[in-house]
Length: 143
Image 1 (cartoon, one colour):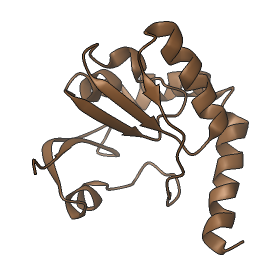
Image 2 (cartoon, one colour):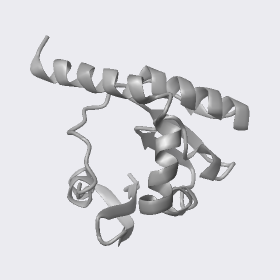
Image 3 (tube, helix red, strand yellow):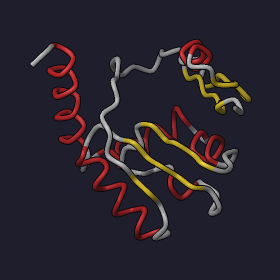
Image 4 (cartoon, one colour):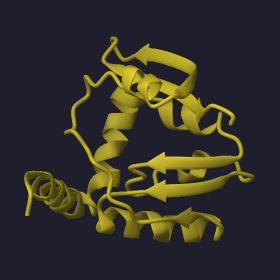
């Protein structure tokens, strides 16, 4: 197994283990740090949407009903929770399992340059919670 595969397997085990308690832990983070980010970002989407690292599906209730959503998640256990939630709420979400390379988890990430480098058009950009959290919306440029 190469080092990338080993690291990915370690992260998958970590998120699988935390899938049962993730929603409860995120309630506190949402209240104190992320605030309205779920409704802020999800309320802006239209058309076909890809959510990378959909986790347990906490964003699902915040999406408009008329979008086509594909969710990707590294952890099968997290996606199982998301899939159950999606079917209970709407019956129309498409969730896919996929392995996504990740570079670690921390709150001081600055994703904007990575988004630009991927060729996406940034529509809105915001920093909040004492400048610690960056949130942005971006779209794939029309072909």
